[in-house]
Length: 283
Image (cartoon, rainbow, N blue to C red):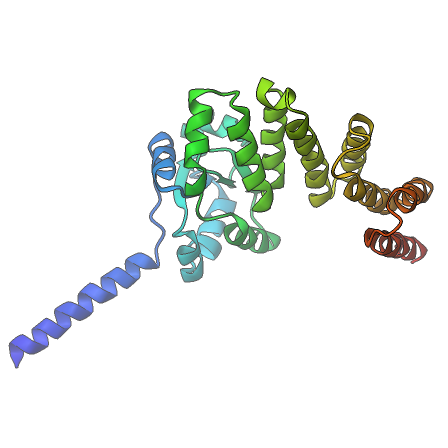
């Protein structure tokens, strides 16, 4: 009986220890090795820059990183904790000038999103970052290897850009589209060039930079007057102009949409967007 009780206690101790470990974040300290690990596993990366004398960092440690839910949410990431004072080159890569700073990156170390400082509003944004960053990049490993062998591999750059757009990583997606457009493989293909240019406009709408979206979509219509995506481009130009309260411009593109695509279901969508924008200006 004594041996049985001892065995049960030992099992309980092992389980309790494992649970305690699961509730704690295992921080990596070597940036290069951690990035290599991310590549091998296809995991996203979380980098926490702190400073020993930083009061906000201490508050972040106590109020955020110590949470059991947060520890579980970080498990799909390669989590790196770096002393800002000792990691100046890495900090410069992400334009970090003061702690705390949290960067979310892809396995290549490209910035997806970030959080500067720490206050009550930071909790929501940090949790949103943990939730929205894709957790598995393994499907892009061949493309990653291709651009490492040849930086101007247009097909691989487009593959990454498309995947990031589908995953909602819009700013980074646009960076890869721009790189792709500079390659002979994409610049020399009318189809790929059109697709990349249109995607840049779509991304700008997605991250609500309506001025940039208008510039990009107008360039698209100018360069591809009979393009595959004209109907959608006209619709988004109506929406973006309406959001900027440029109603004359939105009406101009609405008339073009009606003339070129009289049976388009997007006409109703565009009219509703303009109506909503006008209602906001009246309030």
